[in-house]
Length: 259
Image 1 (tube, rainbow, N blue to C red):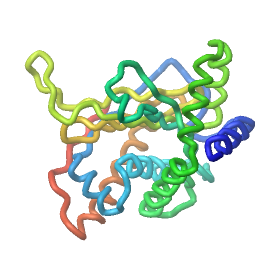
Image 2: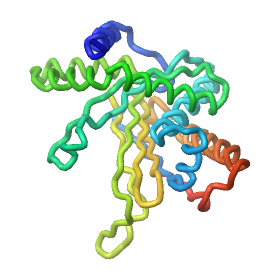
Image 3: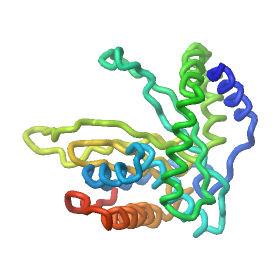
């Protein structure tokens, strides 16, 4: 029952109008990639402090960064609508070849004043999605969607993009350091997908001892890439300092690098 009720909610959401935001607009052919890393030990310490997952913590940083960005641009937003790729594999099938992913829609309220409130709210939202069977609904719809003609699938994808502000992906590349031609690979953030009519996408990749963060931007829509990157990093620094008052997180701050 929970799966079918979730499907009805998803179909109802499909009738919603396109979102309007400083994150959305007409795409250009330009792309800008910003990359930096966060020490995983520090991320783990903050996650443990709030008793949330790493994904929840990263989503909360995204939502709070979006709140401050929209306020700065005099465009307050009620909620942020994110598409989050989710692995649909069972533990038994995790070694099988091929992709088995779908995009799950998450709505995050932006009216909350503190990052701590965003962390708690994101954790409740994602828990609710899991408990009410929405992942099962998305899995079933993804299965059906794969059997539709390409033209229909493309239209459905474009419609979903118009109703969301950005995509936020998370993955694990490798928990150990890798080498290429005998040279150590220092970071592995990948490039998050930038959807049509969207100017920003976030990607989080766990690699070795870091969470590698990547922002894929269309400068024709989001022209102040340095500002939004600095806002995210400031939010991280502030919450890390707040948590460290109750116990010093391990490891030094990693240096950031622009792309």
